[in-house]
Length: 103
Image 1 (cartoon, rainbow, N blue to C red):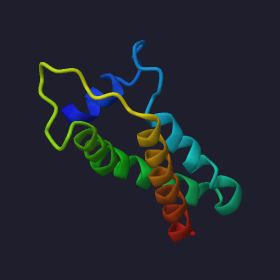
Image 2 (cartoon, helix red, strand yellow):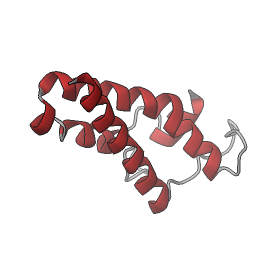
Image 3 (cartoon, rainbow, N blue to C red):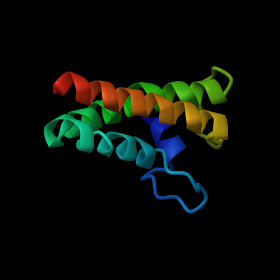
């Protein structure tokens, strides 16, 4: 959980972090509403959220930190543009797959 907090700036509303990791996965999941409907959209959003905070963000933090856990006295690694694109792709695939399976 410390990894997620470190990457999202605690509550996710940090002035020193211009990119909020939670917003793109919500946008990717909401796009499914127009194709699959509300129930499938919510399912895709829930799956993308779960995958994001349980798998994607911790693995991204480990990757950006050279495979080592983030120490409490060190700042979190900065999300690179490439990492942001990879996360957006993973969130989009997860949200659309979850919505398609729920349909």
